[in-house]
Image (tube, rainbow, N blue to C red):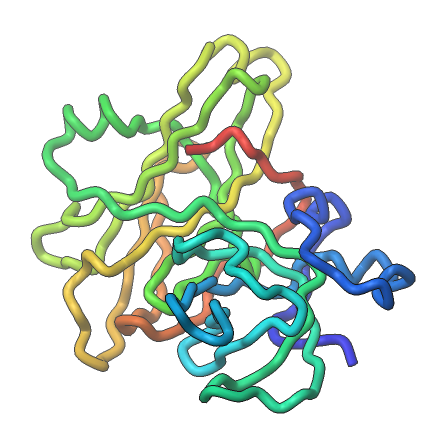
Length: 259
């Protein structure tokens, strides 16, 4: 049975962001849609453990891979986009489910940056516009905020620096601001026929005050294409999960030239 851990809302172009995982010969005839992403997980290595890593699906569901023996991203804990299927086998060692991983690729995973002053953050982190795409990939869970963002992009020499600032509102420590800085020729980016591209990025939220089991409102703000500042709110509990409440959109391929 195809895994239904998260709703699959993704175009065919999304398959390009995945790297094929280790697989067995009996998977050679699987339909191609098995390689479309259907989950965002946190990949967590376990030093000296058996298994050597597990995947956190949300705050209450842990997964172990039947077909990958070593942590796919070394000793780093990162968010990842994956195509997985439940096997039905009993999980050991206190984990919840055993899955087969058809494909997995890491998401750019970064720490937040503390706000200092407007001149400094504008210079270092930019103020170029973005759109937030509110599909299932934009989510707060397991101590991370994962965002699907849309930007105006140029050629491969253009780099998009993505940053999440904390401490932007002295009245509310749970208000954060997304910054986007285009590093490259502005003529290539904002030309007569600008191109749009999407990117996935995840930020660790461990710099925010511990909510101590309480659920608070996490406010995300950003400058959009219309030049105005927009906001979205999420339910946030330290190391727990909460769904996005933004409008669902789709329709762009993903960029790799992001930092």
